[in-house]
Length: 436
Ligand code: HSE
Image (cartoon, rainbow, N blue to C red; front, side, top):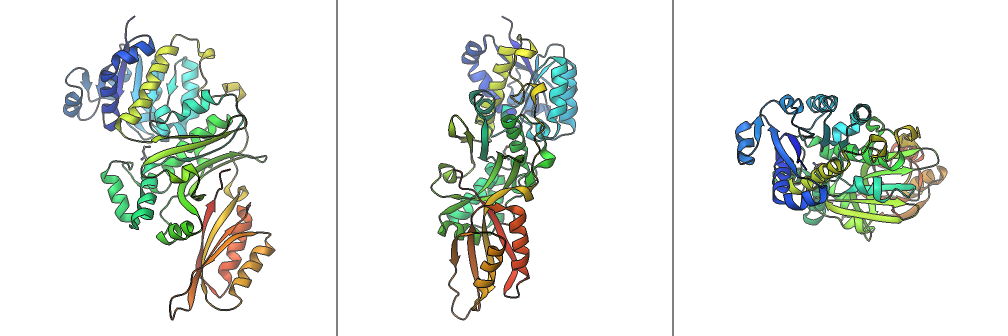
């Protein structure tokens, strides 16, 4: 059978990995796909480098439109990134009747609904395994492997840069800025590292997983997003003394009132497997009503790990291309007519536990004032730590872990605590999840 012809838009880290793995494993891949899969065209602004990377074996152009418009191309791989040009090219490829594979989480999380609708109407496929957690086949696991389950929650370390930064800060006591530079040098960080450190990259990935888990349209604009820039080394240390690690977690949970969709630094018990995921590695925990808790671990970025996901999509498309659209696996796991309009909850309606750190005057009655405010708000304290003030110091830190409460309750209580004359500055609040 004739091989499937693929056009690549952008031959950077992931593009070159895809080219190399596809070549290296071509026989195995053809045995699995039922026919050969061949990259025959590459578009990149740096044509010289693209020619070098592909050993002069494919047609190289500097205009991506030439690939998208080429009648010889069956599948377009979009590895340009961003929402502008990438979106136009993906929609054009679909309009031209081509299947699309993309690693672009920003694009899918913000414009997925429009892209899936266009693809549905045209009868082509859009695949995006590489968009979430790089080489971990989490989309496939959620959409197919766990399809029997009612998904209850997902909690993931889905940004390698921030996990690397937190690991290094904890392990080596290094400062945030120093570790960020190292993450950039190692190639983990996005071109604009704000997306990593402010939690946006993780929120893109979480948005996609939530839609697949709960059968709701992608709604990145409803996600609550907090990064790690406000986190201090002191909090990492205090958390450790209390038996917790701090991770940037993406959490989505189905509740009776709606769906939680949130990315923020989170205390997790040190004994949980996911708390021990270190460096740039990714891990996703999924709890289903039938299967219980499952954990997926692996490299969330990098040339060949991400290529592994891109090529899995190429193989899927190659296998399914002849199936009629009604009988293919739906993009968001649920059939388009069976999508739910379950609301995504604002963060004030989320229930969780909290770590609170406050800097207080070290004198009688301060602790009583704080605990009275919490008791009046029906917030119960789970654990407490008071730092011994150093010789001659008149102020100290108090750290409290609370039992579960509504975010709006804790916010109101914190406002009252901050108004106490004996409490200096603002209260540091970090959410805590037992994940059990
Ligand atoms: N910048 C991302 C990360 C990699 O640090 O995990 C690709 O999503």
